[in-house]
Image (cartoon, rainbow, N blue to C red; front, side, top):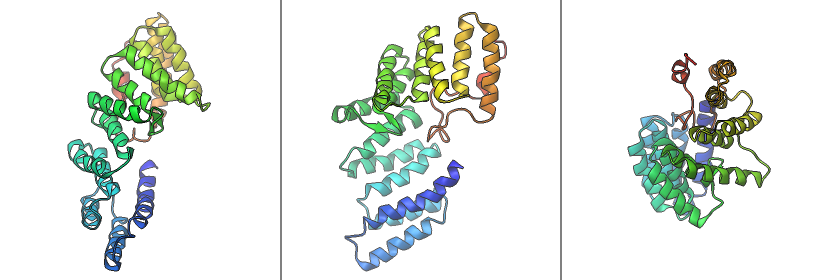
Length: 270
């Protein structure tokens, strides 16, 4: 369903962006551009043809950051990170705002898994806007993930707590933020605190397989192995019906500590 919506919405987004970019074009250029956009809407965004249409559009609009980012985006989702970054860097160079800078920091965190560079970029962005948000999470959430993946658990906890506090200002509790707080406490050996945070995550995302998985691990560490075993079975059942990560980009890229089928195979002896 998500993939279908992507194909349906992309032409709409492209047309809306293009209409505001044509004011300095002559009639011939406008006609060619609109035809390119029309033909591009007929092909998959993951196809070579899509890249070729964007190349043609960029001959007409070489300074439009949007189209450089559009060349990059499907490449990242095909795990062609190095190639995608060439185009995204061009978008960042041309854009006068931080829009593509924050997108690049996100890409480096979740897709490229280049945590040190992602941290540096998010820190620079935070100096300009401490309340910045990208992909439905504040910058502090992504910074916390970077520190988590660098095994700097205490620092990761501080940043994730800031992300949680940011949401509470708007009366929102994000189950993924609470999940990661639970994971951090699990890694720190604070199993009761881990269970507490994972329970909050499960309150807001019922049957979240990943939260149940790490709660089961935490229970096992507190000698509640029978309860842990039952919960692990529940987690696996939930996982099999898709009750795992459903973040916007988790369709294309694995998030830190996201469970997989192999996660359950390795714990058969629990």
